[in-house]
Image 1 (cartoon, helix red, strand yellow):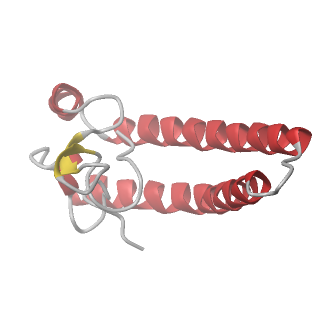
Image 2 (cartoon, rainbow, N blue to C red):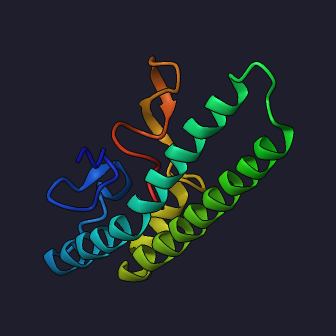
Length: 137
């Protein structure tokens, strides 16, 4: 799995560079990330399947409005669940940091850890970094 530069494992990542994490902090963050991934991966797979289903519904000669709307509600609910888990994960990760580390981190990154990385259209520039999903900071 490509964790991207915001992964808190062996590679400290853009989000924690310069924070001088202790080995214990790094291990705790890695453990939290693994637990988070195990919780979120099935939801993301389900979300992908729902999006494929929605695409298929739209491709029908006579799209079924009720099924499309119901599917969209399921997609919205899954997205909300994933975002809530991401927010909780981010808060848990911040608790591992000292107040000084939190202050350094807070000034450097926005709500979702945006910073230099690959942009959405493939160019290099502002983005959420490389790899899987946003940084949960």
